[in-house]
Length: 113
Image (cartoon, rainbow, N blue to C red; front, top):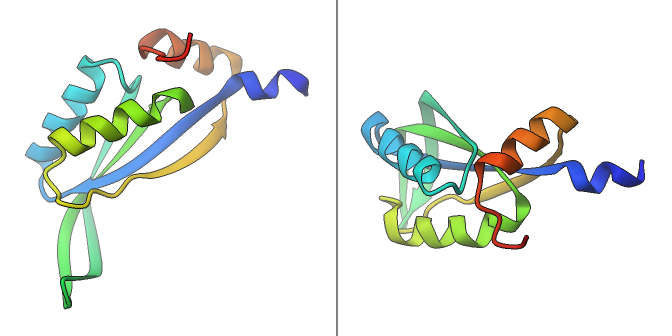
C-alpha cells in the first residue's frame, strides 16, 4: 500500500449559473491543462444565503479531475475566469487506479514535476 499516495487525484467541485458559463469554464480548464476531465451536471437547485438574503437558484455543477499539485493554479484561474464573486472551490482527494491516474497525469500540466 505504500504506492497508494502516488495514485492520488484531486476532484474539485464548483457551480455556475448557466450551462454556457459551465461549458466556457470547462473548456478553459481543459485547454489550459489544469484538469484532465470536467464533468458538467445541469439541473442543480441551490438554497443558500447571500448578502443577508435567502436565495434559491438553479445552478450547474462542474467536477474537475486533476492532480493535487494543480489546486493553486486552478484557484488562480477561478479568481480570473469564474463568473461568481466567491466561487465554490471544494476538493476531495481520491485514490485512482493506475491507468486512470496515468491518464490524468498525462493530461494536466503538473507545476511540481
